[in-house]
Image 1 (cartoon, one colour):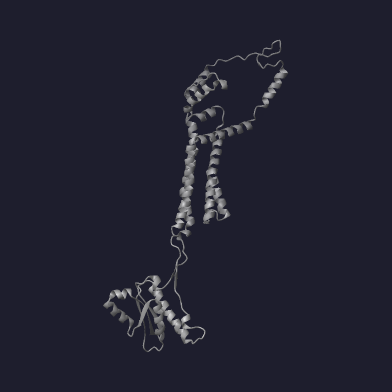
Image 2 (cartoon, rainbow, N blue to C red):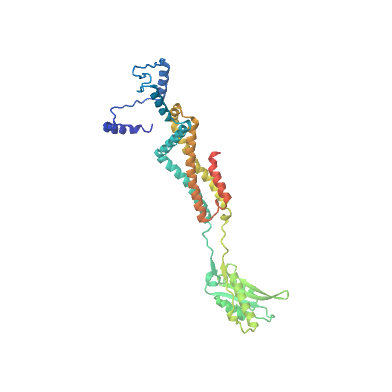
Amino acid sequence: SDDTRALPAFFDELDKNKQSLGVFSCGVNVSSMDDVFLKVIDTENNKKPVQPRKSIQLENGIHLNNNNGYNNNNEFKKFTEVQSQKVQSPRELTLLKLKALIAKRIHDMKRSTRTVVPIMSIAIGCVFAVLGLIETTVNSTNKTPNWELDMNTRAAGYAPELFGFYYQLEQLPESYGQYYMPEALRESVRAQEFKVDPTEKLLNDSIKDLNIYRERWLVGASLEKYRNRNVYIAWYNGEAHHSLPISVNILYNALLKKLVAESNSSLVRPEDVGISLHQQTFEHFNPHSAFLPFFGRVYNSIFIPFSVSFIAAFYVLFPTHERVSKAKLLQLMTGLSIRLYWLSNFIFDYALYLLYFSTMFLVFLIWDRVFQYGLYFSTISSTSESTHTFTTCPLD
């Protein structure tokens, strides 16, 4: 047994306090369980039948067979009735045995604290691992916040000296150049009028200096005739990603001021109107949020059974120790029912599982309410189903 190491200290303490305890001598006989059982069987086989003693009544009325110290049968009858009242009923005895077996499990768990605490810690740690993985999955794509940017050449980081142009066919009567040049200048772009086709002019400039063509020529506009209609075309630099919206915005502002000026309105001046351009990202959508219930089920199917396996392993330790130490055999030999023995183990193990489940349920509930994911307790049906599944799973 594990308690044999405490015997020397026990006997030392007993020897010091034997007078106060009323103990004069004691001894310990160590033998194997097999020797004990064989000796008991051998003693029973060799025991001679003993004749029952006859009841002898003396002159003073004392019965030697009973040796009860009473002088008549009425007194002995009363004594027997008093003694019989102290005997427990079978139901009370069963409850006392069950209580004693559960108390034995509790004391065993207190002695096995070094084993119980790591097992429970690992089991609860698996629950926190599930929540941590779900939280990591959700936050992994939330690192890029929504942002807004004023769309102009300065915010885009282009060179301070930029070139642009405007062009229109000579036969077209309307002119927008006087409005286009100031708008381009607001964007730090020096716009000049092209008298020839823009494509031919830009190709010639690219032959002269390719770097200036790629890095300085940013925007442009042209007015052409297409199917008997006047068409405005915005030109942009293909290697400058923000040049397209900037070029379109310059052209729109020029046309807006042209229309206001031609309306001859006394209420609005061309200088008072304008279109500003802002780049704003779309509302950030986390693609993992759509699969969050799926990820939750995957993590649960891996870690929850893994954590429960440690609890189930703890259930085997006590019966195994009882069987190895022959303690279970001694209890059964003294008249303990095998059904009552396993019933007490089941009650204690199930109570331990309910303690683990209550802790896990509370952790999941707090996490689900704080982060508002709604994975486990979004509806009453999901809450009741989760509770029913985990509480009845050990009974299946």
